[in-house]
Length: 227
Image (tube, rainbow, N blue to C red; front, side, top):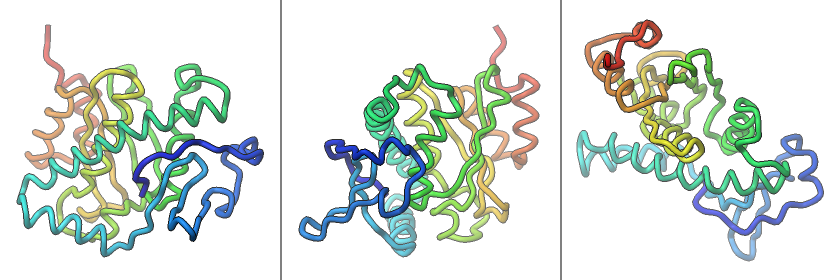
């Protein structure tokens, strides 16, 4: 988990980009008690008990509003991480993010998060021209910890995806988890798009629609107000 940024101090090995070892990626300073990654962000090592306690503690304090709160936390994390990412990406690759192929940009952002234990992902861009994309997340740190509880639990990730994407494209995007490992599925699936589409997906999800049914509805043009 990253908790802030430090001044970048890229070493010559940065020319290897994402082909370096754990020893290169993390720098632990025992005298300061700090763990800093390659991008200059300070990391904190936590156990699954921490994630479980955070989730259950919020539910006890605010009830159903815990989902919205976790989403807000994730969104702020994503917004700050986008600003940090833009700085170190330009420093390391000598180009601005907007001058970069989208999938390369996304994979460059996410692979450090995979290294930090947030899981693997794949991004489905087929519906991008329709104004939305899907993100498949494997081995979610939240869902893996909470187990099969019969409902989506990865609100932190949804907020993270929304906050990062909104900052990078400079327009408001929302995100919702429409399939979760904690629902007995093999992986988590998120929808990223406009508030209009996210609200429609939330309605269908509450009505019992599956992720594939929601995707089919959106691709057929449902969930978009007619002019």
